[in-house]
Image 1 (cartoon, rainbow, N blue to C red):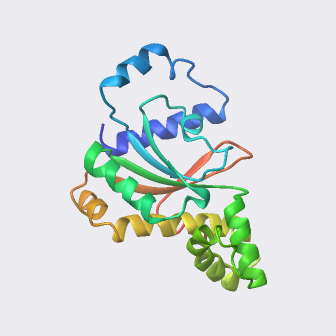
Image 2: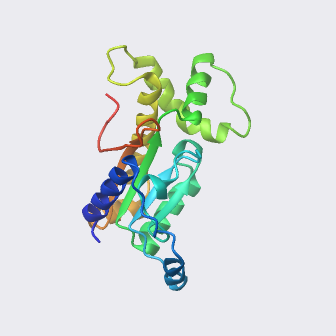
Image 3: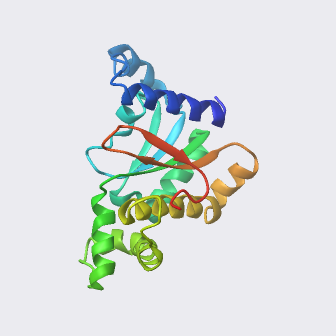
Amino acid sequence: MNPKEALERLREGNRQFAAGVLDSQLGSLVRREELTSGQAPIATIVSCSDSRVPSEFVFNQGLGDLFVIRVAGNVDAPAVVASAEFGVANLNIPLLIVVGHSNCGAVQAAIAHVKSDAEGVQNLAAILDHIAPVARDAYATYSSKNKYSLEETVERKNVQNVVNVLKTQSEVIAAAIQNQDVLVVGAHYSLETGVVDFFDGDAAD
């Protein structure tokens, strides 16, 4: 499966999910037994840890279909980048998607942190430090004329920032992109509609 075919399969899977149609055989015993000898996922998904955004459901995919990397705020932490590189280099996964979502608690915390100019909570700082620069820039330039709310603007800009990091700061991923072996895109999931908006470039303006 090439990158564009993988992307179209996930688009169609999300359309099915948003319509309330899920494949009941995706976690079958037969499929589980098939996967004991190896895996060949069609996409790597970097997503938030939020319990309301399970990638297999959102894209209507089953066991062995997705290589999912979850961390609060879908940030570009070193372990996240390394895991994405593993998917590209070791599993030859043709598609890499960074998925943000509406009502993201990590983004809300980052915005509150920027507005109050407060010190970060010790452990949460590991997440906020990745999102705060994006939130600070969006907060400083935000206008009521923007297409999206401040919160969604930050969610989308955070996704695009992670996409840019993966494309430019990982030699493994950059080489795969150059060879047209992998496609890296951003996306934003709506908790309200169940729809994933795929985008490339700046999708927050």
